[in-house]
Image (cartoon, rainbow, N blue to C red; front, side, top):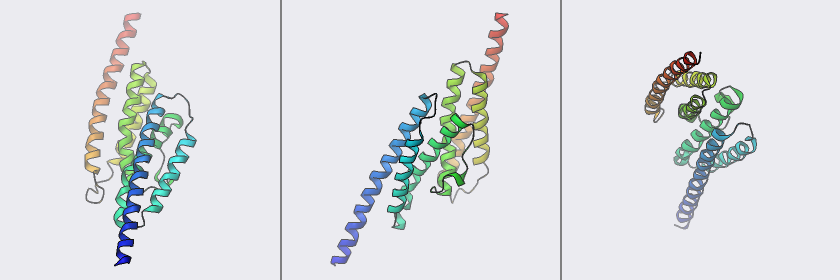
Length: 193
């Protein structure tokens, strides 16, 4: 009897620690994404290293198989933040192999979520009348969308179809915004001169 009480007490403590750390990672990633959107220069290496350490600790804590699902959201958020960062400052998309600690499903879902973050950068470029940047972000959105649409493993990857549908809607709205912006830009230039 004592063994069972000890076992379940330890398991419950582990679960609480996982939940706390998971919330921290999600919050840290959300704050980091906000800072990436506002920044004009790359100053984020330490932030990513800190979050990566928390993810490793989180993974180490999931010794009970039924706790593995607690990794999903923090891993997806990390992929989303890091992908936005790499695209904005280095003009490239990190590959699955670049992450090492992330589950395959969470990489795909994190990439899907990045499309929404790229839309923010895309709209910012339009607001600044920066056609080249708007087109650059739109091309990355298309590339990420093409990547996630290769997968139709809906019974293996939870939320995949929903995220693909959301991404499709974002891409369609963005295409309309881009066409309107370019036509508007041409009109303004012709009126100038």
